[in-house]
Figure 1: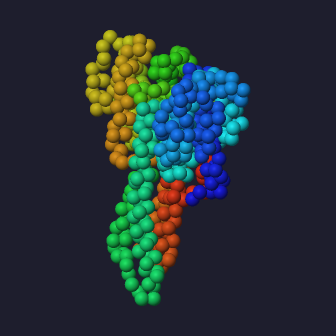
Figure 2: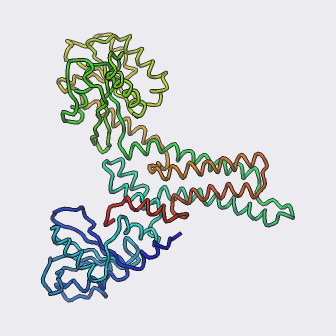
Figure 3: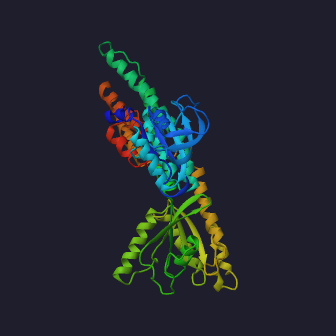
Length: 470
């Protein structure tokens, strides 16, 4: 549904710098709208005889941007993209100029003086959505692609931009539309007591839809961390080398390292990209009986961070720990509600203090421990390899679409509520009009994801988060 303000967007021509602000070798200025070619014709003189108005679509033209007095502002490459074969579905011109901020501003001012206006954040992509070049979920994936900081986040954005998620939502909506249409048909023939929708098949179909929506909802926890970075908590007793390990993994002195127990009293966080995956490492206060109020607050915060983490690096000092202590700790982890759904990587630190590995520690192979010396930076690569492998196992074992957007999650959650009410109503034998109302409600919420159902507020909220020029 196009709002009135969205309609007015279609009646004018917009322009903006599409490359990051600042000085660079090249900048790209994008112009979109029905007057794009006419406006650019007024300020562009091609090196070879050519007419922008009759030029071939997807063609490039070398020439000069000139001011009102024909003074040369810059030599540029001008790209022509005729509707509907363009990003927005409108006539588009892209001017590749030199990256001087002064030149960019001069060209933008020329375009505005000749009939264009400055684009709003996300307005080019909004026009692409309104012109049917992409649905709303795909448009949001554009923003995710721009902000992706890892290979994993990039893959998820590309998958959604290609329409994988949208296809699944459309399939679910089509199934619900079929149910709704049969129920509406029964309402039309209500006086004749005709049943078009087999109640048993209807129940099976609703169960199937509920299962698919449930799988999408469950994927959000993974999708969210893949997009924002996998949270990894480094935990253990005080003075086992947690801060040293964090500094090595981040390749910088991020945390204070000291032999004094309890130095880390607050959680320290930082991110790093390892083999295409973004990890958010959290160095926590040591797990022990706190002796002071401040240290107690640090330990309490540690447990909160552990609850949020997807992966736990449990570090212990192999020169001072017993095998029974480690076995008891790992058993407690597995039986604890806090740890049961997390990947736990056991790390034995300070091997530099040993002449050889104690025989009894060879009996904990079931926990797949990693033996390191953070002080000497030995075997650190085994930790990073284990981290990447852990994420790969989680990602590869997740079938189908992965939801990454909180707005999509909310819409799916609301849709699930309506589907659940429809199933309950079907079992309770409620009237067809009430049953149809629940189905239509589920359709509405699914339609919000792809933009079949939109409001001006939703569109403004989504596209205002885009950068100007996209």
